[in-house]
Image (tube, rainbow, N blue to C red; front, side, top):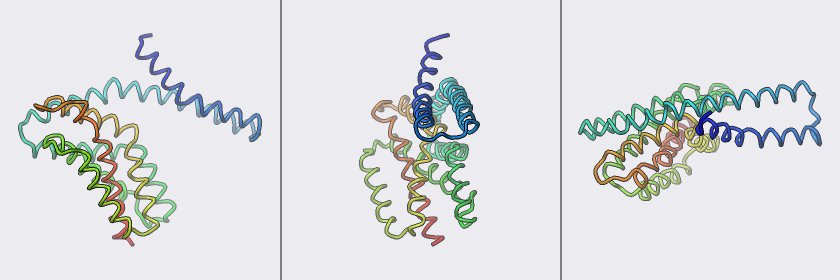
Length: 231
C-alpha cells in the first residue's frame, strides 16, 4: 500500500470519524435513538467513508491531471477568444455535474411548490459559473488584480441585494456556496493552475489560484437576477 493511498485513508478517516464519534457519544448519553436507526447511521457512515475514498482516488488519478492538461493545452491555440469560450463551456458542464447544485435545485423546487423550476435554477447557476470561469481565465491572461475584480463583483451583489425579493436572497448565497463542491473545485483549480503555468510571465501560485473565489460571485448574482425577474 503506497503512501498516497495511506494518506487518502487518513484524510477520509479525519473527515468521517469525528462526526461519527460525536453521534455515538450523543446516542449513549442523550439521544437514545432506536438501535435500528443508529445501525442505519453507522452503515451509512461506512458507505460515506468508502465513497469518499473512491471519490478522492478518482480526483487525484483523473480529474486534477485532466484539468491541468486542459488548462495547459487551451492557451496553445493562440486565441484568447477560444480560450475564454472553452473555459466558459467547461465551467457550465462541470457545474451541471456538481451534486451540490442538484441537491439545492431539488430542495428549492420542492419547498417552493414548483415556483422555481429545478432545471431553471440549474441552468442559471451553470450559466453564471461558466461566465465567471471564462472571466477568471481572461483575468489571468490580462493580469488584472484579483482584488479589483472581487471588489466589483461583491459591489454588484451588495447593490442587487436591495432589489432582490427576501425569499430569494438566502437562496442566492446558498447557490454561491454549492458551486464550491467536490466536483467543481478540483477541476477549476487545476484549470487555472494549468493555464497560468504555460502563459509567459505568469506564476501558477500567484495567478493560478482565485478562480473558485471568482466563480462563487456568478451564481449569487445570477440567482438574485432570477429572483428579481420572478419577484
